[in-house]
Image 1: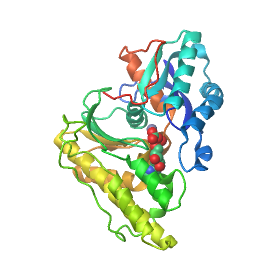
Image 2: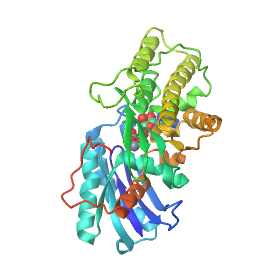
Image 3: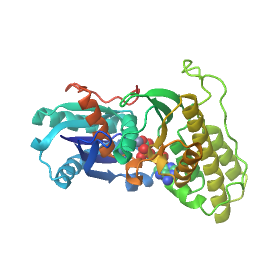
Image 4: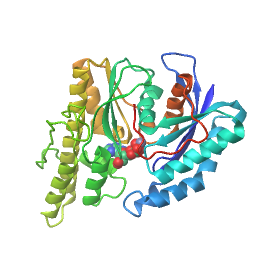
Length: 348
Ligand code: KG4
Ligand code: ZN
């Protein structure tokens, strides 16, 4: 069976066709994955402008879906279902994908599957590597989220921790702005950090020892916090009369070291605590070169299988939504045509 996936939660309009392989170890194959990025539009404003994002999704969605079908050499009648990101994300953007998917499902008679965006990111690990050894602890780290999940069974997700304030990708974007590096900041800092000294500037690491009042059921010591780090960088930059390009590279490298250490440390503490058989990192920040290298290095030293998506599956794309949709469809879960977008949809 082939499924059409649609993703419009932020600033990428994406559609993909994913097919079942019949191989239980590597269950899905990508037949097409079309992504129309809005980065050039938002770059001018230094970040994503929600109203511009939803308007651009409306312009792009029909062409992107048609292209995904053509690339996969598929017609509507060749599909078995339509999967769409229901949330979380920008509500105006989500609504474009959800409305399109509902209209397409109504017109074609195909079943509709609602997918959580972060379940999609977790599925990108399976798309690229095949099924993970379970239980697995997965870090989802993007522009809007930084959370640890325990995956005990395929398709089940238990939240172990999350960020108390900024997401890691958000911290990258804000620090890049402070350094005058433009939007999106993650790739720019990643590139510059290679030529900087990662010990040049002392930046704080936040350790949380108490439970979050908003999530008293979690112990809280695996939570993340990046706003203090961002403030420390802002204070450092303001305290100088302009930075040389070497100093900018040093700040980028020092910032990246602290972020990556915080992410990797907690992932491996969680892996030990929950006796994980594997670990994974997904989401836009999983494209980061230092994070990728440290995950693989630490995994090898601990003799724990470690997984990443390919670079193209790290950032937002519809192939991961299609794959997560197929998993849900095979578990017998479909959505009705009164499905609504949910900007704050919880996972698990
Ligand atoms: O998953 P994603 O495409 O969208 C969200 O769901 O948020 O993630 C986008 C985030 C942005 O904050 C971007 O700066 C960050 O991922 N990012 C990176 C890198 N590539 C993208 N952060 C650090 N290093 C990178 N190489
Ligand atoms: Zn994402």
